[in-house]
Image (cartoon, rainbow, N blue to C red; front, side, top):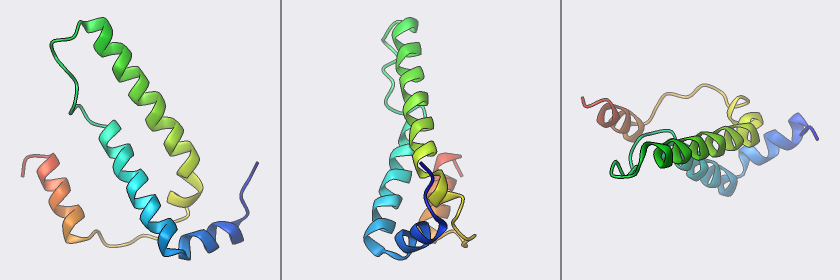
Length: 90
């Protein structure tokens, strides 16, 4: 099923949906990093956890692609810049 561009525009204008989208993007970010892995686990268990996180991340990207790709470019907020700096140890 494809979503119409009119429907996508309508949802993108909705502040509640934008808040939800922001939350989901944060969830994707948490799946897309190495925090939370217990390094005491066996390599096989770590590999299974990593694979599950990758599958979950990719599925969320697939679901949100119409909204994320459709988004106009925006300047990052100070909070986003600080998060990025923190992530890269700056």
